[in-house]
Length: 256
Figure (cartoon, rainbow, N blue to C red):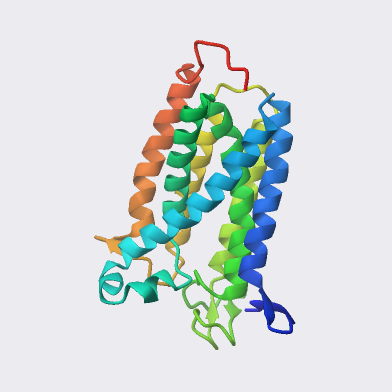
């Protein structure tokens, strides 16, 4: 909607990139505060956050290439150079890379998992505001009073009222982050907060998909994200049950 925030000579500050940057900084800020309360190494939070940001973008683009495989095969540079990403690719890829990093560094993964994922929800909240400014991830046409009309979007249909699904997603992510940080104020078993993130995000994402109208790939009657959400929800529930049983408590003391 207002993607070009500021122009200084040849330099243009875009709303999407600005919101992503703000989101990462806020996620780092709140993640560090929570980490200090949990007695975790602040330096490792920096490292994991940067690692997750880089690997998350790369894996989100990778899954987008898979979803758009026909276009990718015919014109790889067009897909790689586009603004398309699939968030689930970033979440899955970043989690796996962070897990590998913690294994190499001999860190208690699920303790950091419980700090990083609530922080990720904050970054996603700002990121979805960026989507709204850019006009991507748009909703279906609506006659409702909450409809938003784009006029200069390169992505959303212009001149027709649409559900502001980007703002729905943003609000959901911020609410989810608040719930997770409040939940984490008390001492919880390792893996609890992170698994709750997976549960809440998968449910929320599945619901939002019914209101979105941009092409996101499909598997049967489900969008790609709804299909992935089924497995993320199952994983989240299993991890939460295991966490309550103390399955992720390290047998040896972790000094990190």
